[in-house]
Each structure stands twice: as structure tokens, then as C-alpha cells.
Image (cartoon, rainbow, N blue to C red; front, side, top):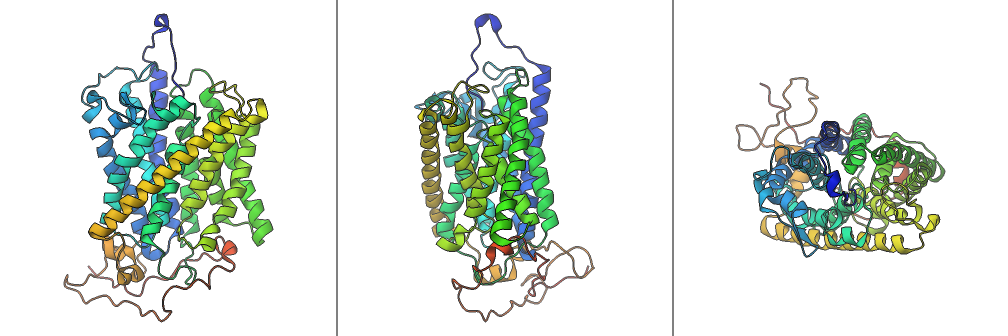
Length: 480
């Protein structure tokens, strides 16, 4: 988000229909990113978990929207209290805001700013869901979203973007969410993984994406929506900064995709579609904090570096043994850290602010500020997310039963299947105790999950041979 915009009394801001319309379009683009994320993640899971993966993103649209209206906007962007959170009574329920009341010194209404920021709040917890695919209770996940948004996202958004927020006042540059969105979500995913644990069969059973076309569709829609995410974060279209952010978003994403594919070809011998999609998302993540601070040449560097680093990072889960199902840590945490720190190297001082990075004569000052923001958000989100997940796990259990995980979370949580292989339509699954015979759970003769069997050749496995997995043998179709 932009730093505070100062105006003279004589230059008092007035409502701009052009900027208001521009921001409403950007808001719609950012809203589209949550369904796009659902498709992106949904294509990467196995057939038996597709609907659950889609729902883990979609439910955030419902929960976070209501919380944002009730109190989230007030905590994130209300009157500052000690640099850590805010509150303005008129923001509670969005009930005390005038129709044409402007947001600060900008030329857009408060309502427009509030709904634009809402879409950031919606997608951030949805990002976390990719790390937890195939194995968590939907009710536990919904409760986690509500608690995490309240205790983590809303306060961190205040730290980073609100006037008076302690990271904002420190001078940390985060144009559109490297710390508040991506590092925040990536660290949270890691914290929850420590509680939830690995999937059954991790590093042993094949867990390939079931639909690469769906992945590519989601990635393309994310790329499209990200122009609103980044260019809209300047809150106006008057001075060219938003245009630079738009250009840098395109440039860095392209460079990251090429960087990921080059690494993949050298390391594993193939250019994969999953690598192209993942590389593009890595570039989008990395340029998010930097798009208003670097030049297009700097954006190429940010994207290429992030593409290679994230491609390398996705394999760390096999080395360290944490089961990050869809590489949220490898892409969003690593990409967010890379983009945020690279601001301290490539900031030109000639776009959103006069802060310069090391390569432009600014010394180490801005890099140090960026490092403070990265470390503090990462640690806060990691610790609080772990504690929230632990409490939920103790109270109600965060994870589905072993039988439900093997049979498929779609059947257990939603009583539906994504694809009707029987050709009868409907996709309804018979459920025990509802007038149908119990679904048989396939026997598992592979014993407890081991540490060998899938680590080898995993780099190639991310992009090779991702055919549709067979439908779960535990599902019985009910004819209408």
C-alpha cells in the first residue's frame, strides 16, 4: 500500500469518479483471485479431494467478509493504538461512514477502500489451505480462518499499511502484500503443519495433480487478477505509479516463469506445465511488495531470482519432512521473503518513494528495514498460527479420521464427488446411515508412512505423468 499521501489545505482532495471506478474494477479483479486460487489448488490435488480444496478457498469469502464488516476493517485501518492495532467506532458494521466520505487524502470513498482491502483479507487465509490439502476437518478449518483473521491478519495489516502502524512508521516498503499477505500466509501454513502432521502415504504413495488444465486455468486467472492486486494498491491512477506497478507485475511474472523452467530443465530434464504455472505464481508473489519500488529491469531480476529460489525451495519438504501439500511454504513464504528483501537491493527511489536500495546508492538502511518486517511478521504468524491450530486440535480435532482421509475428504465433508464417472449425473455419494450400505474403505497394506519411496525423482514428478487419479473405491453412486 502507498505511504501516507500528504496534501496542503488548499489542495483538499475531492472525490474522483475516474479513480473510484478504477478502484472498483481493481476490487473485482482481486475478488476473482480467490476462486482462481481455488482452481489452481483444486487441480493439484487428487480426485478425492477436489471439492474440499475448492471449498477451503470459497469459505473464506463468506467468513472473512462478515468479520471484516463487523470489526476487521476497524482493527486493520482504524485509529492507531500503540502501533499494533487500530479501532474506529464508525467502522464497526461500516455503519457510520458517509456515502461520499473520502479515505484520508485520497480521492476515493471510504467504502471503496474498505471493500478493496476486504479482498486482500479474504485471499490471505485461503492461501494457507494449500498446505493442508487432503486431511483437515472442514469445520476446524472454518474456525481457524475466523480466529486467524482476527488475531493475525487484521493486526498485521495494521502494522504494515495503516498510518501509525509500527512497520509502516519504520519505513518498511510493502506495496501490496509481501509481508502482510504472503509471508503471513506462508508462515501460518508452516505453523499449522507442525500440528496437523503429514498425509497418510507422504513420500510413499503417488500424490500427483489430477488436472493440470485446471491448474493452468487457475494460474492464468491469478495472473489476470493480480494486476488489480498490485496496480490498485496505489489507490489512484493519477501519477503513473500504478502504471509502473502494472508493468512490473507482468515483467517479474514472466521472468519468474522462465527462471523456474530453466532450473527445472537443468535439474530434472523437463519443462513442465506445473512448473510454468508455479513459476508464474512465484513471480507474482515476489513482485507484490516490490512493484512500486523497482524499475522494469529490477522487476526482471526480482522475478528471475524468485523463480529459481522457489523452484529450489519446494523440495525442502522432502528433506525436512514437513508435508506442505501444494507448496505454500516453498512459493508464498520463500517468494514473499525474497521479494521483500530484494526491495532493499533494487529500490530506485524514483517510483513510490525516495527510498533507495543498496544497488542504487541507498546503502544497507532499507535492506535492514525490510529484514525487520520479514522476521517480525514471519515469527508472529508462525507462533500464533501454531497455537491456534493446537487449541483447535485439542478442542475438536483438526484432522479427519484415517478412514475418511483414505476414502477422500470430499465424501466425508461434503457428500459429493467432483466427477461423475458413472454417467448418472448428480455426483451424490452414499453415506452410512442414510439409507445406503456403508462405503467400503480400501484396505491399506502399505503400513505406516515411511520416509522413502517418493523422495526420489520428486522434482520430475511435479510435472510429469499427472494423469487423473482413479476415483476412490470407497465411493458408491446413488442413482436418482
